[in-house]
Image (cartoon, rainbow, N blue to C red; front, side, top):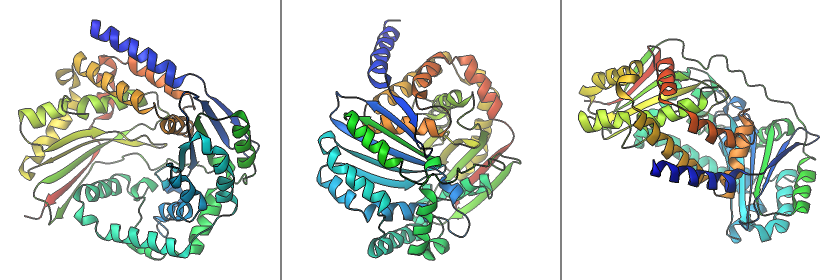
Amino acid sequence: MLKRARFIIILLLFSSAVYAGGSKVILDNGIKFIENKRDYNPTFSLVIMIKGGLFLENDKNSGIGNIALSTWVKSSELLKYVEEKGGSLHASNGSDFAEISLSIPSKYIDSVLPLLEKLFFERKIDDKIFDNEKRITLMRIKTILDRPDEYAIKNFMKTTYNGFPYSRDVSGDYDTVDKLTIDDIKSYLNKLISGKNMIVSIAGSFEKEQSEKLKTFFEKLNEGHEIKIDCNGSEIVDTKKVELPHKNIKQAKLFLGFDAPPANSNDYIKVKLLADVLGGGMSSVFFNILRKEKGYAYSVGSFYPSKLCNSRFVNYIGMNYENVDDAVATFLSVGKNPEKYISKEDVSKAKNYLMGRILMEAQTNYKRAWYAAFFELLGLGYDFFDSYIDNLENITLEDIIIVAKKYINDKYTLFILKPTN
């Protein structure tokens, strides 16, 4: 009881420090501009998320997003300046959105602003940097067999989404990346950078005048056309089982995925917690059964990615191939009979771990800006983190049992990467 009281006090202290304040305005060109002033931390972070991700790619240009974004940022004067001042500037593409993020000591904000404006309005693509990014990407794709875990996840996603945009890997395929040109990159960026699909989130120590300059600058970007995300085809329709041999592994890698809700679902936080209860660490249900009791696994766990469309609740395990059938049966049994395996203590431990991890992570200005943009893009609202913590605290054992039975069922994708022998 005393331990729980201490945890609640810590939670309240962190919550008031991390999540208080924040505001959002919509600029004339459709950009959602979010700011969170935190003057006690003399750093500044800016996160830009642009809706689209894999939905802006196709079978002919798969992988263009990552190469375009990395080439664009690395070709800029901004990157050199930020790194010289001890800051960071990154850009990448994801399943639902592209991200550009910048973090720097606050005293350099005024110097960064004109370089940031130049990044967007005087877009430069360096030939040598493009060739190098393309070469590195092709080499990584070519050597994926040397990274069995990555290879297994890539093929699981390809199997479970079966032609839906999420089935493509953000790195792309060798043939599509090999054919990309600088003109392709420029055309992609012109289409990507549009106000109606953009969220700009800032956090840290900054002056009102600096914030207003950012708004004025971003408001000059083209409005563009809003990207409509069509989620038809993202659900699991039929049970699939695929086994793929791999000559460089001695143990099988098993991924068992179930249809899971998009992030705007009322079940979102409950399923997030379920993933930690079942496979979130050494005190999780699956770890205790499959690793401690049965001695099957060298690694076991669960994950549930946040997606705009239907996600997957994935159980994974690395083990000897002869134990695969029993492992699958165990995963299914726990899902269908969660009341036999999950206790109040399991839920409480997972809840405390998840809350602590999120609260500690969100102490940085970068993560504060990132979460605000992320939840806004998912349709949950820039201030959803406040609700996230409250809702997480109120989840009960009964809630977890209900969502386990709801989502862990007989309709799933089973992918096994197995030794050739």
